[in-house]
Image 1 (cartoon, helix red, strand yellow):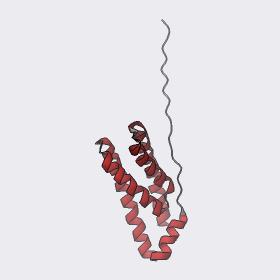
Image 2 (cartoon, rainbow, N blue to C red; image 1 turned 90 degrees about the horizontal axis):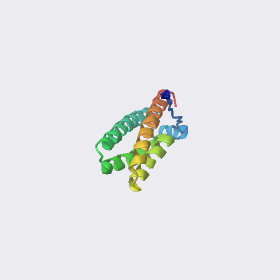
Image 3 (spheres, helix red, strand yellow; image 1 turned 45 degrees about the horizontal axis):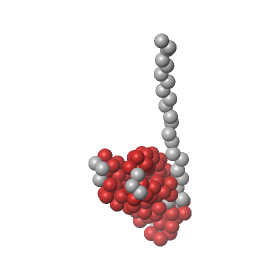
Image 4 (cartoon, helix red, strand yellow; image 1 turned 90 degrees about the vertical axis):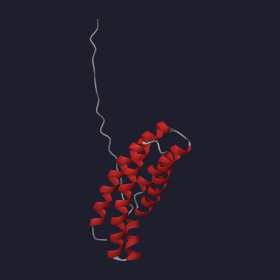
Amino acid sequence: KGKRMSLVSHLKISEKVSIHAESFRLLQNSLGDVASQDVIERAIVEVAERIGSIEQSLLLSDLEHLRKTARGLAAISQQLGLLALARVAQDAVSCIDKPDINALHAVTHRLVRVGDASLAAAIDGAALPM
């Protein structure tokens, strides 16, 4: 009999994100330094909570809640200038609307990766003077 070889490849998946800095400046100009910092910090927490809620909704197959949460996440992300996260959240909504559950699983995993990277970028950005 021939030898059987097993080869396992590990793929490093990373998501490049950026923050639309103009969104931060608009908040600062409209609210002032202190208030805009507070709004940004609260929004970052809200984004993190929504990402967790989306993961939980997928595990529970609660597509209605997932759709509602992803739509809200897209809106908040857009306002914060987290444009990649906003796009992926909208992609999740599209997967539910089609419906394409297999794609939804893949997009939700991507949403978590993009969300983590976006939150790190936003936290770094929020710590910088505006």
